[in-house]
Amino acid sequence: MLLRESGETKKVDYNLKAIVDLELDSGVENGDALLAFVDAINGTDQNELERARAVVEERMGGNAVVEAAVVTANFSMLDRVANAVGIPLEDFVVNKTQDFWEELGLDNYPSASYTPEGGFKYM
Amino acid sequence: MTVYSDSHYSVRDKIDQTHKKELSLLSGPGTWWTGAQRAAMVAEARKARCEAGLQESIAEDEVLIDANLPDAARTLARKVALMEGVDRAFFDSMAPSELSEEEYVEAVGVVSRSTNLDIFAKAIGVPSRKLNRISDGEPTRKRPVSLANDGFFVPTIPTTKAGGGEDSKKLYGGASVYNILRGLSLVPSEASPVMGLVMSQYVIPPQFYNYDFTFDPSITRAQVELVASRVSALNDCFY
Image (cartoon, rainbow over all chains, first blue to last red; front, side):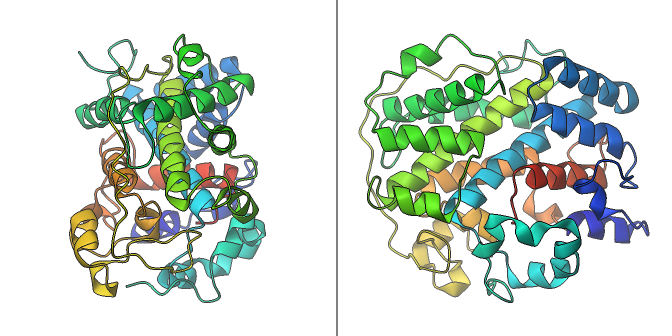
């Protein structure tokens, strides 16, 4: 949701499908390098991680390596919490995202069942 | 001495400060587990990730693994660390038959928070950080009063507007919060550090919908959201 909205404010239409299909161009600057870095962090190939990290550093600088790393770590933590305690999606988020669940295959995730029809009533 | 002084990269002060605090909290007594048990859960999680080739071992693991920890907590630590079959069926197999809901929530928090530290260390090319020396002391075993069964697997503290009372004011500061920050609120001592980490690693609440905001100009908000989205896709996380 926030990736799409961040694009809308800049009048850029990002390709959300690139999140699940790395062959596609997300439209986000240096998106290919960042996605490769995330995958390498989550992988088991140390050489691949070093390569992917070096590409991010070369194109975006050392601070970007730290920022991409810390966001990856942050969502690795939150995803574990969300899946383990069954966090339902809020109603307003459902309204803003439902149109792309099927295309991205999000509604096939087991954790999709944690969200009731129409979403959790947010207060 | 900063936590990441051995890194080739310069790590922001706020990250350094919150991670330093984590290294102490994770090996200290919680609300339902002792410091030794919490440190053992971290060690068990690290061991699982090392065996899976996801990170390299550090010397403390073998020492901490011997603590008095129920088998169910060890299983939980390994599965949550690897994100392996962590779903409703897993929860049902754990609580309340093997672990109380409170013990389950605290264990999820401990493992998720330590995995956060380990993934960051790996990503910037340094070894996992050693936890501080285990602190003695008994768990407080204090359960919040204002809990609701709102569709999460476990009871949570609602927002103040939804009847969360004093517990809500204390934990959320009276504000409305997203469900992700409510998730661990059955054990406020776990929910609170998660909020602190999010606010040092991702975004601070007043800037949530400011798409020009990032903690460092080297990365844009769109790039941050792209990274976040890919991580969640890899973890099959619908939320």
